[in-house]
Image (cartoon, rainbow, N blue to C red; front, side, top):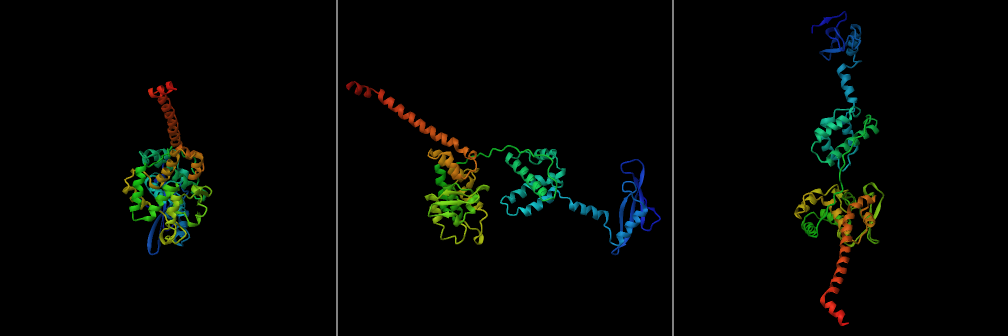
Length: 380
């Protein structure tokens, strides 16, 4: 478009189609030197921005004096103030630096959330965006993956809203139903193979973590943050601090667990039973635990530490000697519903006991009906 001069130095316009209407309108530009460079900047449209040559000349003067930003600078600054989901996530990450699952959260965000929703402000996200996210990014993923991803989205937005960075979502995210009641168990032969692999592995710390998980049913996080002050050897109790967000609990220190802990008392030299680098809180034992699991040839889908907690519970439930209320207390479940997953094992044990009673009575009846028994009766 051809430049058209005005009565003001350094101000010109070009004609362009009118925005939102018919006909033409003037688009004003300014020319000026700053820092030894010649700048040409658009300052506004005749109708859309109510711009005139006189206003453009004033803007030019302010730009030369450094009293005004360019439209581009104003636009970029405005963008910087917009808290998109990606920007909120960056801030959220710093706030959640100690979160154990942060690495997985980063991966889920970059794989599923950022491509679809990263550039949007939370207030601009609608339920159709969530439907598209499920249909495109999360297609074919397990219900657990979908639920964790949506929970991450909700957590990031809620954190941003509570910290005044953005508005919250205008709708409730519908979470998929996930069956988390997977009960992992090991056979006696598998337990034997595992204990053998533990004894032969070079990482005694990881081995002791696994053995204590099997002997006490403690959770991974509870084991790694366990301190010597939490163990009462005299009275025979282990104090579990804030089990899964609940109040502190005490569980019995059985002989097998005592044996593991007594063997470590002199070697750790710090507050933690399973210390990390420089005696600090240990973050993980995943690498060694995986190696031990593979050496024992346990099933691929067996989750070592979580699975050993289930194995502990399954052994007690199937023994027929432990009621579900006691099992709930040993596992530090806040709700009996969590312990109900083991009810069928106790039912099977009771059924075996009932069957045994039936077999005993049947044997008595059979023996009474045998010819020898009849002859004895007649002789009397």
